[in-house]
Length: 182
Image (cartoon, rainbow, N blue to C red; front, side, top):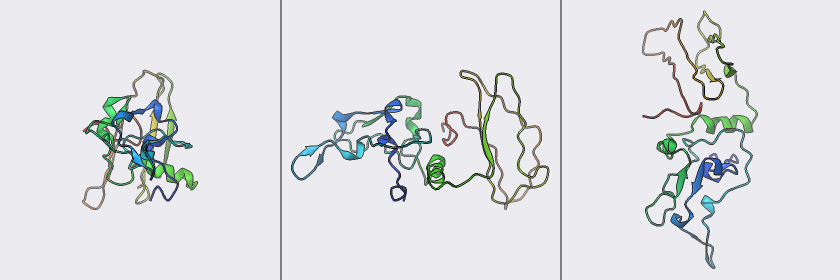
């Protein structure tokens, strides 16, 4: 589906070299009808990327994709992110964000909060203290200065009990759209 909407595989992004490298000796070559050539599935494309490189994307190949010898073909610069490759169970956050950006959809809740050292900010759900609209999911990206820690505390939370409602609070530390280590 994402191909039909103009999507590219993550490891084919024009900015991929900052995140992954391709181990070309381990990549199976393609037959073009006359000769074996570099595998086009691993080639870099001329892409316009508005969102961060997403190791968890449904468009990220496995670390061993097109391997000719059982060795890794995609090597992450930050090896701690390798567990995310080929882990998508559907469209992930940045997959959806790419479509949202391409079709100029708008967000109704959340956003980016840039904090200076020592600065505090109060975040409230829409319509607080009343219930927020059904089906609403709010996502905030809270950024601090480089090499700093962001501290979060919950001052008040009033959740309805029952199996029909699900509410959660989740902290992520690398990219907004990526799960943390399991």
